[in-house]
Image (cartoon, rainbow, N blue to C red; front, side, top):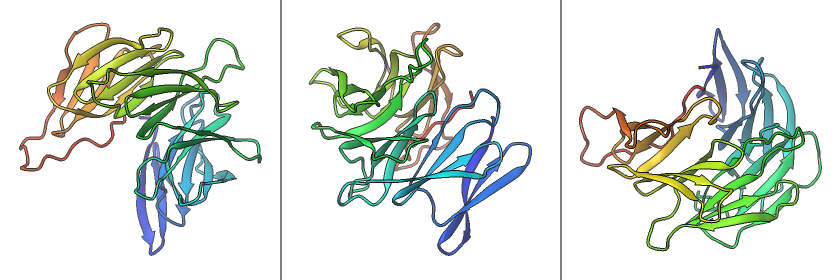
Length: 276
């Protein structure tokens, strides 16, 4: 892994974010961040770390853990924190989903320019149940940062970060459950979790779903690298087990690990992070 980040308590009302690679480094923040996002870099350790702290986002250089900017937020009424964030592939734009009063995703996505101090471009979604966002990977053109993909209930939206407009949308079968999580793996493909289904969505097609496999339990979290470097998707399930799926090889998910003892009330996998 390039670096490992964890939040450690420092004193009452403050926290330290620790980064471990060759040596431990840390940055002190006034409270645990409500969301984190990482931008990519050309070399190991490059890129930015974004920390959501109330109504502002603090930007940290990943190579030395030094602050390099603050983005003031224009959160909607009733929202005090950020629920989720994602960097564009060229690191010029940060997509932000405010946290609703319930603690879930608000039905609004804001686009902030990293180098700009302008008001955000805002997309208000009419469909409730926002569950995830991720930027598609950049195209061949240098100026092509990639659109944002957002999952809402049974719908998948492709949004333009420059205008906030909906470029395209797709809908799952009404008899199937809604999306739980998504991860972009190329300029036009997305891996999605929905109930027990792990799916590849090809956004170049009108039907969307290109391939689907069914897990033994409800899939709850995933991670996947760019298709340029790997064809493997890792995902966790409702019983706390970890699986992998090689889309160019096997036709069924492979079990990697399961809890030694199944609890009476199983603890599902909340997040999967794989070093790429």
